[in-house]
Length: 454
Image 1 (cartoon, helix red, strand yellow):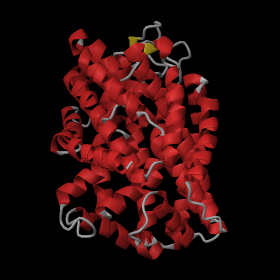
Image 2 (image 1 turned 180 degrees about the vertical axis):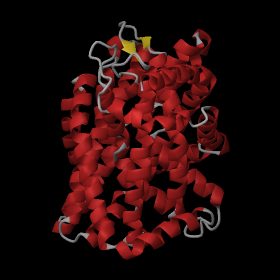
Image 3 (image 1 turned 90 degrees about the horizontal axis):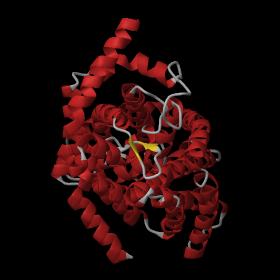
Image 4 (image 1 turned 30 degrees about the vertical axis):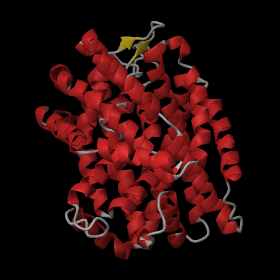
């Protein structure tokens, strides 16, 4: 296992080099400047779309705008927000949070373009069903000669839509939060595997029901999980209110010095922040366009606006709160802690007794909703590659990977995800940049209509 983990860590460091950083952050800057901040002028309209003001049950698609955003958030607001932020701080120090902010801000523009395109260039799978996502907007928008790039995304997505991180951290959280404090310090592969089997059974009950069940479950769980987690962190910040301002200052100063961990290697810190932001809100990676591509709408720009809200909710709000929670409690200074263990330390110190159990509940909801969404993504990738009739086979592969994730190490799991996400980003961003003029033209037509109606 150590050899395999080392391979994935080396591969992740290679893939997440300067070219990919330029593609993700530079691509976001390009979308922002190219559109002249056009989508950002219609935040109010985006909220109205999300509220269902323009929903039409007869429109093509499978789920409404709110369910699409909930489904996408279910796959992004998850362990990336609780454990991923902790990993970023452990690897890069407090300054990594600032670069997560930067990545998320420009990622909003990326989400608008990629998810607008995912509806604009929806295609039919082998069963004749309407589908969306990077592989479809590459094939439908750029033509057959671009099929290798579309297929490359689907192959990378098959491995990127994996449950191993979520399964790994559910197991770790269960042991750290529930077992260890109660004197049950059981650390063996059989316990981990047993928990993995339990997780696999619960996930299977939902994912075998398809996108409709996933969207329905996500739309019910996501709002409640966000409110519960936000309320808990606000309470922790109130308990440690004297440290909030100094922690914000530390984030800003450390972002340009990296003195805490990386010894002045600001470039490495930027990459760390971008990697964890990509894992958290997936802007530019390509998974969310697959979910938003299933929305019931005839207006691609509407779905782009709804999707744009994702990074704001996910990274600028939820991840920031997690980061502050870890910093104000001083938990980040414990060098032997990482991932969910670091967040659990922060909750336990500020909310003794109940804190770990609140986090445990949040972790379960966050992680399971993420698991539901990722299963849908993987099915779409496999369907694109070998046909819709075989898409359900992915569920069996997915359930098997839950068992793998339950016994793997955190370092190996994070490296594997980084490799897959990095590979997915190339076709997603290249296709979106080439098709950007088509999306912007549609946006201008749509927004002119919105202004005329108002």
